[in-house]
Length: 315
Image (tube, rainbow, N blue to C red; front, side, top):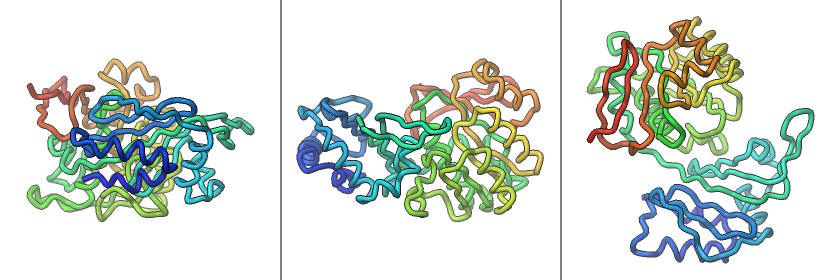
């Protein structure tokens, strides 16, 4: 059951009351909540069960600022690094996206002021949603994993599945006689572990070490040097720097599980950086997720050529 109250308490009283009124309706399932958006001079929008609902309330500029202050525990300055990345991670792993006037300094974001909108993205864990993928990722005979790339369009659930994979690999799976192994996670945007004051808000297993708020290129190198991971995990790779770091990790004997945006092999080949990994035969497994499936439900796998695997919704 989603605890909605500590999210609602971030809002000024008028917005809190309007949202509380909506969520009190009998037909509203709180557990299907995906987003709450507030924009200056526009209605509150709630995305619930994949439907966008506009609430009759016009948001004032001062209410955006007050909400941001609550999210930042009344110390916006201490959250400046996260604000410059365009989001803040709340207790519970929920992420608040931020838009406004971006201030640039020496080619980098130094601040976002005149905040115009906030998007509360509700964090959810679906334990067991990686069950269908596990047989293709685990190398049980070596108590290891295959170098795996999970590919899907945005919104298809790859981060949710990746998070559950980390938990299972880290904890071990007794029924498969798979002993847990050390997992290093580079959580660049805070979406996997959802660290809050150094504590993972999501269950990512007992043998998992996390570097958050760092680029994948730097984070992968740091983990290899300092934490001796048996597998490194990161979300949404695709840059030249990501590819170079992954190649170094694999050549160092560390296994990797990563995700990328795309729908098929043609998308992977169109990305010049990803094409390098394909040409160098880095991947043992590539798993494609269909855009319209629901995470955690029943799926079937259909084999593609050689090591490539397609994940399609079961009819």
